[in-house]
Image (cartoon, rainbow, N blue to C red; front, side, top):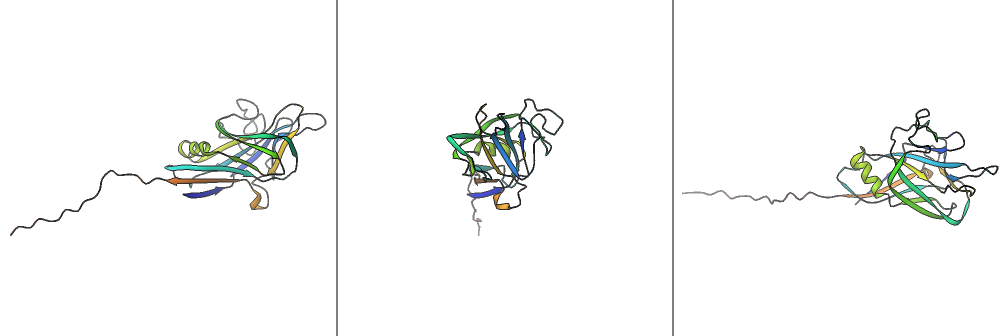
Length: 202
């Protein structure tokens, strides 16, 4: 079994009410300001080219390290989805994936497979486990590129959010980390080589 780790090649958060950002943090959930809802989602891109296409993905998880403390009561759910629009850029916004061209649906176009993580409090790091299908799909069908979006609680009138460090943060150990464990099967060729002894005649 091989363990591989990856930082994003690009990440950003998008905000339904204001400009988005590719700065040193990621925001997910609903931050209420002045009595208004502000929904945030975070996008991440990973290059998984070092994983062979023949790999069997055993386990996969994403850790986003906590930057801001906010207590959740009761626990909240955060979910990772595969982005179906792979051409998003650093200029991404809630309404446009490259700063000018609109998503099919505001807030990002995404699909299953997905994975969820329930948190008791954002004093914890956000760990999204069970990402094996997302990794397998990226390796087998998308040239090893995984584009994903993390969506948190978005209940109108209820503030609950997570703020973590992005790939642009100065301390490398606190940047988002994708950990993948995989194995590569040895093909059964279905035959056994045999050496035939030469036959001699007098």
